[in-house]
Length: 130
Image (tube, rainbow, N blue to C red):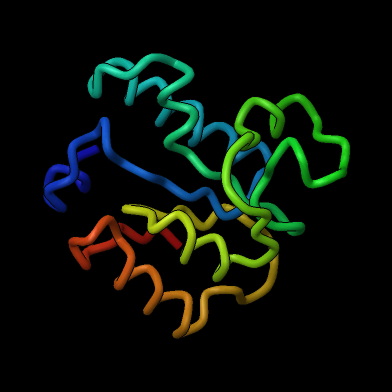
């Protein structure tokens, strides 16, 4: 929350990527969603739409064809393209922040970081929590 202030991003405008979709990612996403409601003035639905979860198959959506468990389903997207890689998702979302909450191997290469910096809601200062 303080990082968004330092970045100059209003909480109601924040876009956050969770790279990982297990219990840690869902816990952080739920906490963040609650903060966006309490401090950003968003509805619960609006807050969850500001959070994008990515698992081993890409951006979690209702339309990608696999059965989602209940914790992934609560953050599944109904909008946007099917993004199957982290880089595709970063380029589409242009997040202000990313949380690395995956046990998957190295995924954040220079191209991903450059996409974060160039997208980042237009301010060039992404919040990165590896």
